[in-house]
Image (cartoon, rainbow, N blue to C red; front, side, top):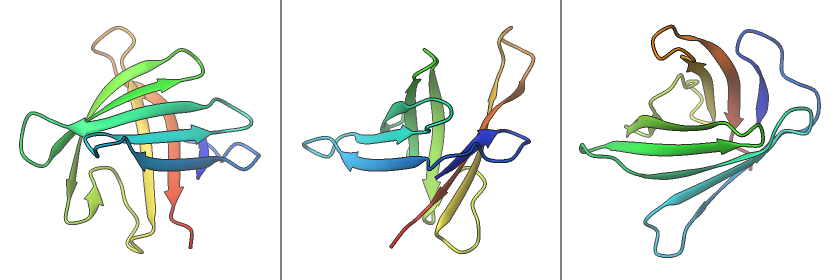
Length: 112
Protein backbone atom coordinates (compact mmCIF):
# COMPACT_ATOMS: atom_id res chain seq x y z
CA UNK A 1 0.00 0.00 0.00
CA UNK A 2 1.16 3.55 -0.65
CA UNK A 3 -0.09 6.23 1.73
CA UNK A 4 0.48 9.97 1.86
CA UNK A 5 -1.19 13.36 1.95
CA UNK A 6 -4.09 13.71 -0.50
CA UNK A 7 -2.19 15.83 -3.02
CA UNK A 8 1.40 14.89 -2.22
CA UNK A 9 3.92 12.11 -2.67
CA UNK A 10 3.69 8.89 -0.63
CA UNK A 11 5.21 8.91 2.83
CA UNK A 12 8.50 6.99 3.07
CA UNK A 13 8.57 3.47 4.45
CA UNK A 14 6.73 0.31 3.52
CA UNK A 15 3.03 0.68 4.28
CA UNK A 16 1.01 -2.57 4.44
CA UNK A 17 -2.66 -3.51 4.53
CA UNK A 18 -4.34 -6.85 5.21
CA UNK A 19 -7.95 -7.97 4.90
CA UNK A 20 -9.46 -10.92 6.76
CA UNK A 21 -12.95 -12.16 7.48
CA UNK A 22 -14.22 -12.09 11.05
CA UNK A 23 -15.29 -15.60 12.04
CA UNK A 24 -18.67 -16.23 10.45
CA UNK A 25 -17.82 -13.92 7.51
CA UNK A 26 -20.33 -11.24 8.57
CA UNK A 27 -17.65 -8.52 8.67
CA UNK A 28 -14.41 -7.88 6.81
CA UNK A 29 -11.52 -6.62 8.95
CA UNK A 30 -8.98 -4.26 7.33
CA UNK A 31 -5.72 -3.47 9.16
CA UNK A 32 -2.95 -1.18 7.98
CA UNK A 33 0.43 0.04 9.11
CA UNK A 34 2.10 3.18 7.81
CA UNK A 35 5.55 3.46 9.45
CA UNK A 36 5.94 7.22 8.93
CA UNK A 37 2.34 8.11 9.80
CA UNK A 38 -0.34 6.07 11.58
CA UNK A 39 -1.75 2.57 11.82
CA UNK A 40 -5.42 1.70 11.80
CA UNK A 41 -8.25 -0.75 11.50
CA UNK A 42 -11.60 -0.71 9.73
CA UNK A 43 -14.60 -2.97 10.06
CA UNK A 44 -16.61 -3.36 6.84
CA UNK A 45 -20.16 -4.73 6.85
CA UNK A 46 -23.37 -4.66 4.84
CA UNK A 47 -25.15 -1.33 4.41
CA UNK A 48 -28.83 -0.45 4.41
CA UNK A 49 -29.32 -0.67 0.64
CA UNK A 50 -28.41 -3.52 -1.73
CA UNK A 51 -24.76 -3.46 -2.82
CA UNK A 52 -23.84 -0.87 -0.15
CA UNK A 53 -21.48 -1.22 2.79
CA UNK A 54 -20.47 0.69 5.89
CA UNK A 55 -16.77 1.07 6.64
CA UNK A 56 -16.13 1.90 10.30
CA UNK A 57 -12.65 3.46 10.35
CA UNK A 58 -10.31 3.98 13.32
CA UNK A 59 -6.67 5.11 13.21
CA UNK A 60 -3.73 5.74 15.52
CA UNK A 61 -4.42 9.49 15.57
CA UNK A 62 -7.69 8.80 17.34
CA UNK A 63 -9.71 9.52 14.19
CA UNK A 64 -12.89 7.53 13.74
CA UNK A 65 -15.28 7.74 10.83
CA UNK A 66 -18.10 5.83 9.16
CA UNK A 67 -17.95 5.65 5.37
CA UNK A 68 -20.67 4.48 3.01
CA UNK A 69 -19.21 2.55 0.09
CA UNK A 70 -20.31 0.38 -2.78
CA UNK A 71 -18.80 -2.64 -4.44
CA UNK A 72 -20.10 -3.14 -7.98
CA UNK A 73 -18.68 -5.04 -10.93
CA UNK A 74 -15.59 -5.87 -8.85
CA UNK A 75 -14.99 -2.14 -8.24
CA UNK A 76 -14.73 -0.49 -4.84
CA UNK A 77 -16.58 2.79 -5.29
CA UNK A 78 -13.54 4.96 -5.09
CA UNK A 79 -11.13 5.74 -7.85
CA UNK A 80 -9.76 2.48 -9.20
CA UNK A 81 -7.04 1.73 -11.77
CA UNK A 82 -7.88 -0.24 -14.92
CA UNK A 83 -5.45 -3.05 -14.14
CA UNK A 84 -7.86 -4.50 -11.52
CA UNK A 85 -4.93 -4.66 -9.08
CA UNK A 86 -4.93 -1.07 -7.80
CA UNK A 87 -7.38 1.05 -5.81
CA UNK A 88 -6.49 4.74 -5.37
CA UNK A 89 -8.43 6.60 -2.67
CA UNK A 90 -8.68 10.15 -1.47
CA UNK A 91 -10.32 10.76 1.90
CA UNK A 92 -11.99 14.05 2.74
CA UNK A 93 -13.24 15.52 6.00
CA UNK A 94 -15.57 18.33 7.07
CA UNK A 95 -14.44 19.44 10.56
CA UNK A 96 -17.23 22.03 10.72
CA UNK A 97 -19.81 19.59 9.33
CA UNK A 98 -20.22 21.35 5.97
CA UNK A 99 -16.91 22.54 4.48
CA UNK A 100 -15.04 19.61 2.90
CA UNK A 101 -11.24 19.48 2.67
CA UNK A 102 -8.62 16.91 1.69
CA UNK A 103 -7.54 14.56 4.46
CA UNK A 104 -5.45 11.55 3.33
CA UNK A 105 -4.70 9.55 0.22
CA UNK A 106 -4.11 5.81 -0.01
CA UNK A 107 -3.25 3.49 -2.90
CA UNK A 108 -3.90 -0.24 -2.46
CA UNK A 109 -1.94 -2.61 -4.76
CA UNK A 110 -2.67 -6.33 -4.97
CA UNK A 111 0.46 -8.46 -4.57
CA UNK A 112 0.98 -11.98 -5.89
